[in-house]
Image (cartoon, rainbow over all chains, first blue to last red):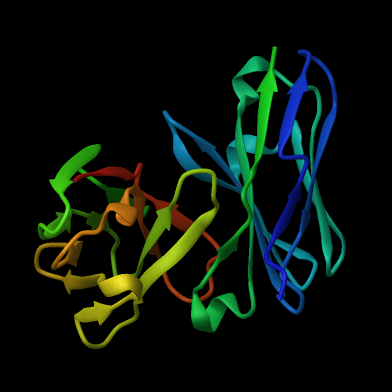
Length: 115
Length: 114
């Protein structure tokens, strides 16, 4: 089975631009997560979907960050407008049954640099 | 609120030596605990997980961890470290089965010397 696929792997944006990061979860997984990883803050939850419904979002990220699940096999994370402090690695993860297994499968991440 | 502390930002060991990476958690109730590993240029991978039950859990590649409620700890151990274990290790806590939030520690970088 293919793992979690994230594109692009690297993105460079100018301040104020809109960027869209994409994620394809493992086939058959019902739970999808977006995390942000930085050296200072570590891993922070941005969004959590179960069967395409938004279950949780990171309160601090609501204003410029929007995650969507367009269908069960594709999700996007839009950052609009970008700021230099958004420079980080954005990780997508999926789970077959988060409530029971608690196991996440992570993608390799999308590294965003905002100039 | 739940939290995880990994007090050691970096640990260096010699190949073949034993290893312990420390993890302290804060959660009011019975936690679900995890160790994830991130190898260079790869995504995080699950090493092992603790669900309420036997306090010692076995993971992949010879890793194990022990849950201690009295110490609020979930330390990771390995009897003999291999050079391929060079990676970043993250401890994480989930407060119950119905929340999606997995709270991670800041990670411990493990370096292995030949």
